[in-house]
Amino acid sequence: MTEKERARIRILVADDNAEVLETVVPMLEAHFTVVGTASDGRAAVEAEKRLHPDVVILDISMPVMSGIVVAKQIRQGGSNVAVVFLTVHQDLDILAAAKRAGGLGYVVKARLRTDLVFAINEALEGREFVSPFPQE
Image (cartoon, rainbow, N blue to C red; front, top):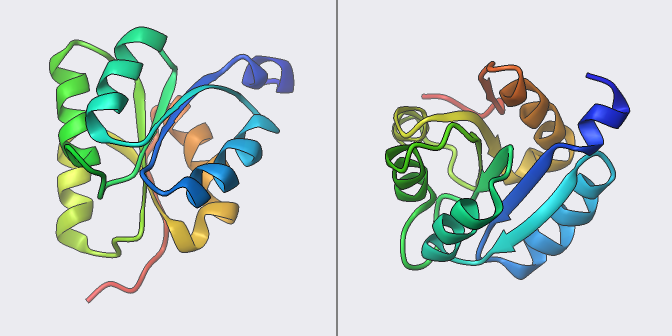
């Protein structure tokens, strides 16, 4: 994918932490087009329906509904948007739930600067990416 094609990729970012949004949005805007943000699960579902992004970045622990529930609702609504989770959770059970919900990417926030853009690019190609984290 060329730089020009990548710049046309539309991304929705959903996270309840304003500091995360303030970090992630400008970082992504250097590569893609961020079409919107949401700070809770219901707002994320509504924004996805309204904005039709190519990729949705979902925090797992959000008010109203979790990112995993958001991903399930988006899929049930018929959307094929690429889903990348951005989370503090380094837990194999949560990772498995995220994959079952249709997530192609699973980026831990401690590695967002090194992993998020890569995970988005992988998801756009239909490939999974999981940030390395200690596994029991």
